[in-house]
Length: 198
Length: 198
Image 1 (spheres, rainbow over the protein chains, first blue to last red):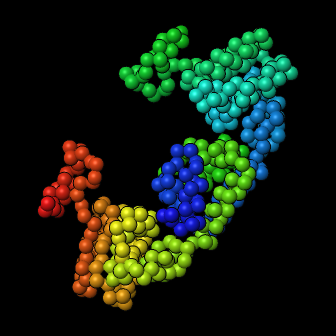
Image 2 (image 1 turned 30 degrees about the vertical axis):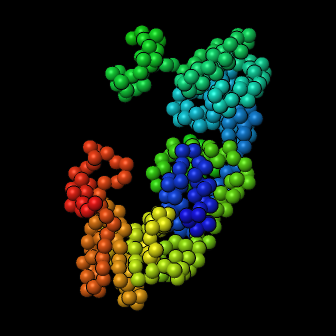
Image 3 (image 1 turned 90 degrees about the horizontal axis):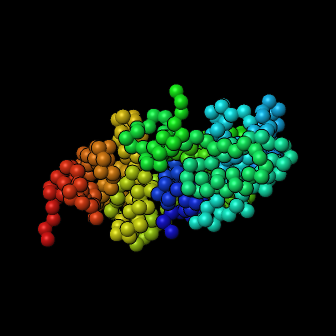
């Protein structure tokens, strides 16, 4: 073992975080060693309480502190418009734009044959339940513009066809501030295909 | 606030870690949300105990679990040979090579005029104390080959000249596996300057 036991233990735990290797984990631990005892206690408590203080909204399945979540409870929001997102992070990213006034449904992932994630593992049953109960009019598919995201969108669109609701997906095209010269073929093809009237 | 309170709190704490921005911090927190309660308790405990279980060696000033540290206590090591390092991490990196059999002295940083780190803030007084008490014969300066590291090495070499000990610094030259074509000018100049007989 390279480090004293208590340091090595924390290095190993930090290394488990996504895209953190042992060297980065070491930097984190030695940064923490320079902090005050109170700061470390605060950090420890925040991690310990993370699961205790959060729950999953029974309605939209987002990670939240109240159940139902504040969005589902807000009666100013259009309950008949559901935006389907991969996870809570994506939901909060959309919320930050302040452009959307409907409700959400967290899918909990996307179909991924390589990683073995099948439709049954996603929150699709709950989505169908909501479509039936809440008389949903529009479903916006806000999944990532990746192979997996598109596959899942197509799967959902096909599956939910019988319910005769309006199904849309987020626009594909050139992102703001990008350079046409460096745009990939698919993005540019989409930009042509979905071109807008001025 | 974008996130529920308990999540935002942990995102903020993770964002304080070196080179972690809010987006990376979010990824860490949402990764932790997927872990079991026990795993989070373990993580929290490891952080809480970090400072309690570690101390600083009275001799070499390295972060350690025993005082004096295991290296200073090891009587098989050459006590008259001191390797001066910036921090405990660098000491442990050198230890991992298993090539050095002397003792260490952790400087706690390097002189940096931009960041306002002056010689008085480094563990130089303790180093001089050891040179006087332990009758040190050789001092190896193992500081980073950067402007700050070189400045500190020169400062120490000048300061410790009166004690008439052998002062060396780690070799400068081409790193293994590198490509001569892409070596910078200073590295290549050093490689010429310090060339070795075959």
